[in-house]
Image: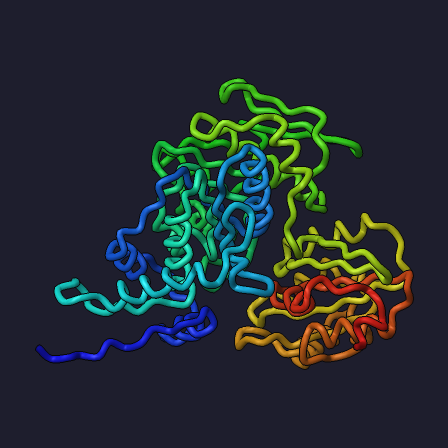
Length: 450
């Protein structure tokens, strides 16, 4: 018998991620055929109720609130979300904790073996994108973790996203806005159709967008999904102290009154929390949840980078807002914070974003801009951002600096800001992640200049 050498697998997570980045000719390759074939070779299934969350904004917050409520009910949760802020392992949480690197390694190896195939496998070796490869590895890790419920966030779109190889027991569609238009379509109707691809016949779909595209409603009717719609099947109302939520009598009429506001800041979080409660009700027959678990879960939920206010002076706000809709929400939240003598911005963004529309919404609130390059090819450089800001009438003359990294930009802000000022870091996950590399920064010029 010939002794045929088997190529050695990577032995660290960093090496596996480098390997996954080199496999496929393009970074984003929409379609399920390749990833489905590898999943079939792996025999990949999730043997627990699955909630899949799609949408333009609010996905991460929705996943975090679902996780918190189910954790408080005593269930073992598994969450897949992307992208990460600092460490890749943040994408996979089991029982509320990020998975350890070594727990992911066997799953990466299994994906690689299945991708390469064996003699007789139809199609031979299959090329996977970085997102497809890592999604399969995380789904395999979740499948072996003894979960009571799996909560999966769609990476991009829905219909052709790798997460959609799993059938959702309950789908959640959050707010839909204009983003990734080169891949998903030029208007909300086209983008909504892509998001609606996570629906399944006869299963509940919670739509928490207050004004959903007609394409979402049409798709639910076409395939016979059980539609739960904000403002029609469930609703919420609140004042400055508390809020309440109720289902329509046709869905059981359950109510929650006197709820504390979710721990995640921002007015838009009530919309997300309302969708979360609808999803909880939709799956109540399989995953019973107590009223106390709802109250405690929403009160304790944490998610870095979503209108996160860091204690200290000057005030520091971290927000991953990266498209016009989410930047508008950020601007409204900043406006509600009250008066600050000067607002400084640390801003870095991808080159394909609608920068003019983002600036229209937030520029009136920003006095000084510190622009940063980001460490990936899709990102705009600080110099390119500066050119665009100088062309915007509200930003002209307000660019205070160009920097190589978000942390460099933050240090420059702190060095020039008064203690009573405010600094907001936004524009991309990579912008916020760049200032969280060494943990949440302590806001002092002495610390950040070290």
